[in-house]
Image 1 (tube, one colour):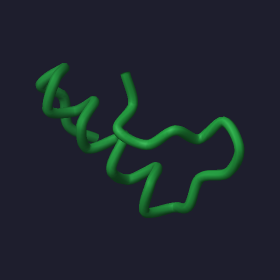
Image 2 (cartoon, helix red, strand yellow):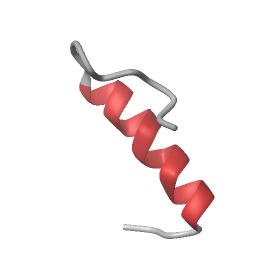
Image 3 (cartoon, rainbow, N blue to C red):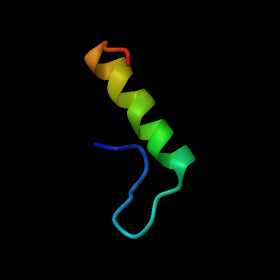
Image 4 (tube, rainbow, N blue to C red):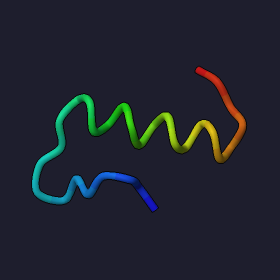
Length: 30
C-alpha cells in the first residue's frame, strides 16, 4: 500500500515517498 493516498491529489513529494517505499520493498533502484 502506498504511504500517501493519491486518489484526490498527490504532490511530487508524496509520489517520491511512495516510489522510495516501493523501491525499498522491491529492492530495486531506478
